[in-house]
Length: 259
Image 1 (cartoon, rainbow, N blue to C red):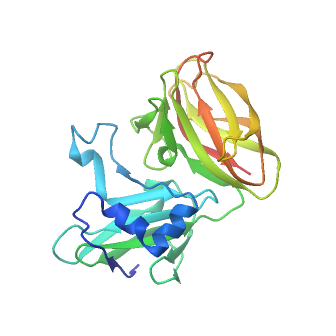
Image 2: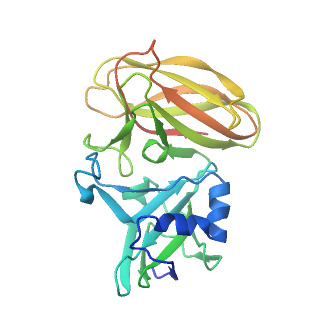
Image 3: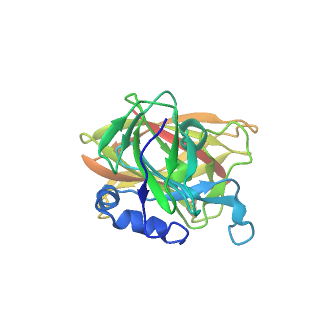
């Protein structure tokens, strides 16, 4: 699939992503809750292995479940850049794709391959099909020492979040059409029986769903799904899984799904 690319001030600059977000289209995505991250190939810090992050592939998930992906060309000539939506974003099926620069829909596809002009960027919005919202922990907000991992086989997307230390947390921004109690499915792995605290609040920190301790049975090196429920308010909610002082063990979190 071919799509148009737009020239940015200098995609060789590590702050090039900021240039995209400063544009009108990028500003709109940022106002909708976009937090972009580069593609991670391993948990090794970038300071130790520069190849552990791909500075030419960035993506982020929006509260409505859609994605924004930016493909950069940091070279001095036109180059082809690609992203596989299942491999990187964990999207099942064939999503809808929109060229953000051109404000035009592209043909639905499972991947994107595009020619990007020198020091340019291609920015697209990707909308998965289906009524179930899947939110990936690898692209969520991490806190308290939570971090990226991808060494346990069978995960969806580029990886998952490791929640191991006390105070570690993963937070998802999720839109709800109306206030109510929603089923939430947690795809996880745990070496031993573990617990995390699950709760939700509004962006202004107003509580929505009271914190509840969730038990994660040992998964014996496999990925399992735990079914729970959570209260959400109309609009944007921040769903957090936290290893509090009263929690124990360690949980590898791949994604959550909300019907």
